[in-house]
Image 1 (cartoon, rainbow, N blue to C red):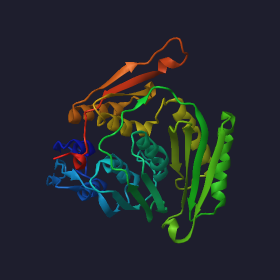
Image 2 (tube, rainbow, N blue to C red):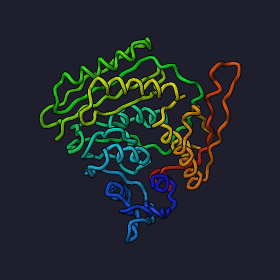
Image 3 (tube, rainbow, N blue to C red):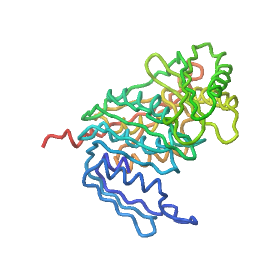
Image 4 (cartoon, one colour):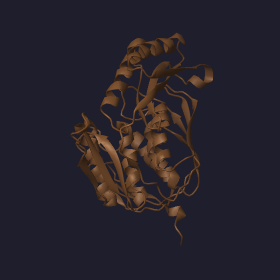
Length: 352
């Protein structure tokens, strides 16, 4: 939907869960369509009677100020992430308050910290300087009650071309451990467990304790931790999770720390959750070839689907070149993705 909105190409999506017991769009997807309709002008969305087919004719991105109530089935990250793609190319500045869950357990959707520490720095690399995410209230599952304010003040005509071919050396590990409506000692237990795992890396480990209480802590008790490895040049790789029912804070801290190390060992320049954003912004950049180094483990089914969608909607292909340089040990695990920008210009910046 986002690619279609950026390119202005109408799309039709068919057979949405057509073989399942309750077919068609789920409530969070309909909610996302409402949001998309709110930030664009002239979009036309047709949903079939059963909800298994949808026709979308995109309008222009106008942005503006609004409040969006997210259904309790998905965290706010599911709604914020697509907005990152649209916000820089809007007519007016984006200022949206999202209400709902701020994180969910073991989910594929980005948590709020993951967007703040992982995706916003990627946008800075593409020339989107002023973009921020403020957590006004935390909301742990199941009841939520969180509030997050997404603000984008940088409106750019088109994204910069990216050349990222060196695997960065990570110089520090930072993180946030938070809890809502539980004893503050939970946070320290998570931090200690994570520290013990990360100590042998030899880099400085700095994890902030973030205890929320009272009105701002949302409606449910919960705790979670996000760890970010960052390099001097501003690249970041991260891991995050939240404690489920009956989970021990120690186990969670340890698990996320190991996940971070795992993510670092299987990523080149960007982490797994940042690949799509990087590729899309590269594809809609100026008419120039951008290059990005990837790790072979980052290429999975999702990655291939992304590339197919990019090709179908923008007509641009990603060229994957084996980056094997036998003179350097360990270099055979990497490949270089080159992609030529389509010379996209934001509709609001076009000269009539």
